[in-house]
Image (cartoon, rainbow, N blue to C red; front, top):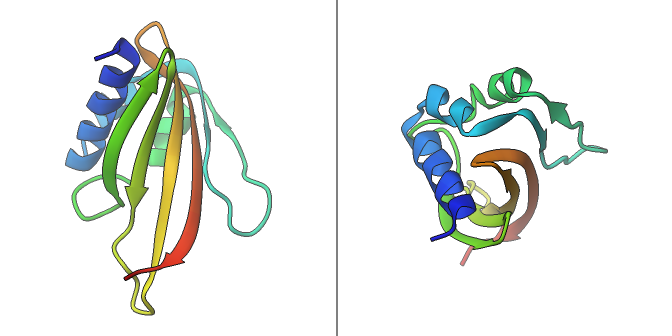
Length: 118
């Protein structure tokens, strides 16, 4: 397993447990986070403190999407995810694309789409 993949898997494990301190420790000081945007351009969040604050209400058991497989190539890592189906049968699915440097996440970009389940 690559170092980059191991960092993202540690990050994902902490995310699913709601461990904000470990999530934050996986981030570089100069990290950037660009979430998916539904109503216009996405606003990029920069810096460990600001990104950690942005993540604070998104993580933990039953709070977010089901995280799927992780792939890595060099310093780039991709993770699939999907939310549970909504009442109308739609599913929000996507990919997180990470860049890792010196054992920490320096970028997380989120790409998503809404599909029909089934």
